[in-house]
Image 1 (cartoon, each protein chain N blue to C red):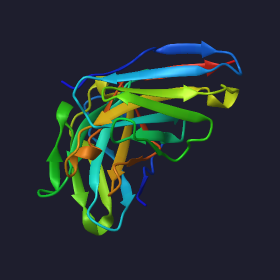
Image 2 (image 1 turned 30 degrees about the vertical axis):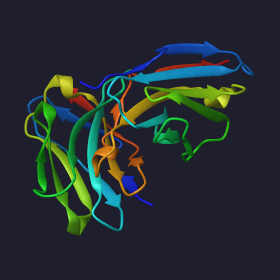
Image 3 (image 1 turned 120 degrees about the horizontal axis):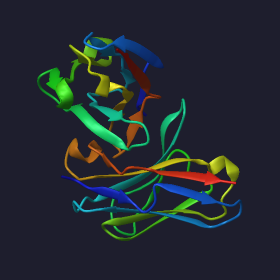
Image 4 (image 1 turned 60 degrees about the horizontal axis):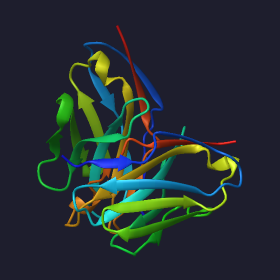
Length: 112
Length: 115
């Protein structure tokens, strides 16, 4: 079975600064990897996904993520954070049974 | 755009009541899912369905049941609500296809409070 670890529960970043959220997964084969964002009181929105091919994937809202097989990681990055990026971010991994396994989430606070 | 709708955004029920949470998707997706979300625990899968009238237990099915009579609709049922079922409930759907079956689209959630 697959699993996901998001080591950071909460990150505070200044507006305009760069952001990196960590995600480590456990799965025996090449996984399907996702990042979702959840604004307060809302459902989850898909930011980006990795299925295969280029290990650097681009998503919506200026986010990107890099798949590193050797480190079992799929970290999310944004070069310059906007106040509207304050939200909770979830990393998820899919294996071979229709199901996604989610990390516990990282809450991002953006300070002016 | 995929649209997943949930019947209520907020719901307050009493202990012992039977509770129905409804979810409808408009993209003809085969797969549908029910999760509950609690602080610090992320999303936990309750049940999922990969076809009409088909269902499979997720990680925390105890105290819940589901119904999928039509492809677009997936209902979560709390047979006898308890206070420990107070939570945010999220519905999702996904298409079939290698990799794409994991690309889930979520509804806005129902925040259920059981008193």
